[in-house]
Length: 261
Image (cartoon, rainbow, N blue to C red; front, side, top):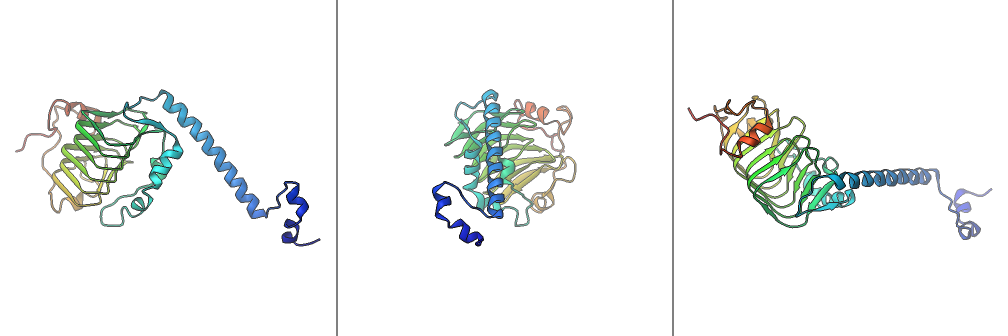
């Protein structure tokens, strides 16, 4: 009997449509087939989810393959995040989910990412004149351009590849998620509850720094230039960890903190 290489070269096998593969090639083919089947199941589940999820009139439903392709375009930028002093970790696969893509700039008065809603990916700039609210268990928000909002209340993952400007309050409340900005960051009032991670990786300026629990990540660095404020969340609003109450308060008032002493 000849060698495997000799066997693979037999013309009769090729003419019969038969392929001779090594054990490693067979294993790889099996893994590829399993991945293909898994991706097909995931795409079907995502399409089913999007069919009943609230939609944004200026965005379109996207496949998971489209979402992965969008994130892959910025893989290099994601890979170098967090190599400096500011703590930050970007896992692109964790940002993949049933989502809607806005292919250009978006400007709205208010934007709410609902609970159990889809992820939102904006290829351009996102401008929110009043409040941007990301509810508990909402999908991820990824902005390829810059994000500007008066108030931002988040309990989920946000990644901004451009600049972030919050002229009012940025209130973050999530142990497991982060607000990560690759460009410049400007925030009037930053409040981080439950160790919500805020990671400005470019130049940043924060006017008022509020740490309700005293252990927010990166705040020791921020406090070098902006000392922690003695002000706290106004008790009239409710629990300092109630993101919904904070979001509702910012609909009618411009500040959720106690009056300066």
